[in-house]
Length: 216
Ligand SMILES: C[S@@+](CC[C@H](N)C(=O)[O-])C[C@H]1O[C@@H](n2cnc3c(N)ncnc32)[C@H](O)[C@@H]1O
Image 1 (cartoon, rainbow, N blue to C red):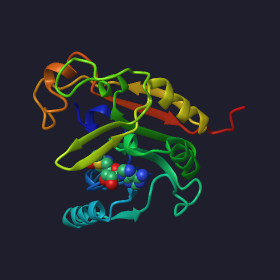
Image 2: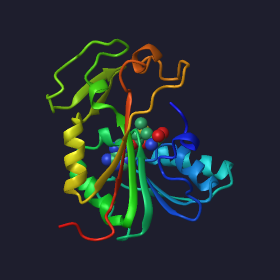
Image 3: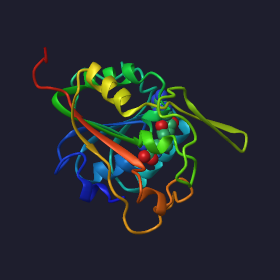
Image 4: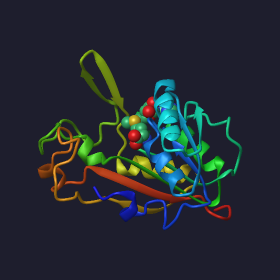
């Protein structure tokens, strides 16, 4: 799909902003945003991923604060410390999404933006590579994949489920993006073949705000 320089999910400019990345993995996004002039803190619970992230930041000569923590509990971070929080392809792995959204809401300043991406709920119930359903949209049990002895657990949430979790945490949803693919095959073509993501959205991006004033 188009890159952040075109989508502008995090707004027109991040320079000078305090940005929090939730589940940063190898730190590619955190480093990119630091290169754009943001003050970035990035959290992940994998020390191996954080080692990669620190090495990447060093090699690009940028400063990022990396924090090892489960994103369900961000007590290590102060209240209202960030202008922007975001997460790329990670929150479907997080079991307690309500607690997580509550924590993200807490650490954002009033008026702050929270954006995240995950596989679109309709795409998640299709079989890999083909336009065929694997299960019911309404089945909220986790989707479990086993490959080469490893297990991946995706917590399936409907559009309404994600929306409820955001609004219950105090966010106002401002936009749902379903970017159409660029006209070329991508590096994840086994899961997101072009032919399929031309027909239904592979990814949903949610944009939400912490209101400036308490909403009653
Ligand atoms: C698919 S990777 C995405 C990484 C990065 N956001 C990116 O776009 O490349 C998912 C990441 O989520 C992290 N993760 C999953 N559950 C987590 C949790 N509860 N707390 C912290 N990190 C978590 C994993 O360690 C992994 O680095």
